[in-house]
Image (tube, rainbow, N blue to C red):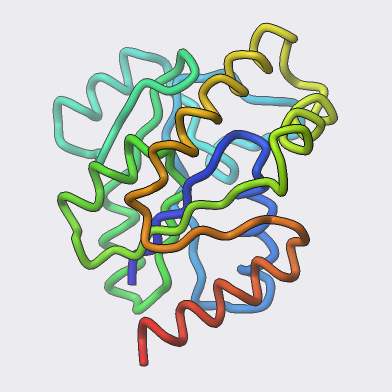
Length: 182
């Protein structure tokens, strides 16, 4: 199955996916291609595949991306070869993508299950972004502005989860997968 996981920056998407993969070996996150610069501690090919704009445009031109969008000033895309590979292996294919990309994938793959992950509050979301220590104040403000728009756009998602604790969210995702695949 394909599971679209979206939510504002700071909602905890990557943390949730990492914890979910630890307890369920079928869960496999697609490594998104991006033109943004790596944050401290991020590894190319593991966290993201970091490419320049020329390479990204080449991937778009050769239909190597299932979807692609401009988000927070950088390009992001989902490599179609990974999706096909993990589907063929019978994995739970997790696309950690923004709401624009989620809508695009839903059009191409109406069988995909969409989940929108939210922080318990906008104040908590801002705190998480600040605690990262990787963004300027201007970038945090842009991400907060985008968060409000993303939350409004999430009305079309199949499921909404609040990331109060990673354990609770992973438990809810496991339950959701069991219901969908039963």
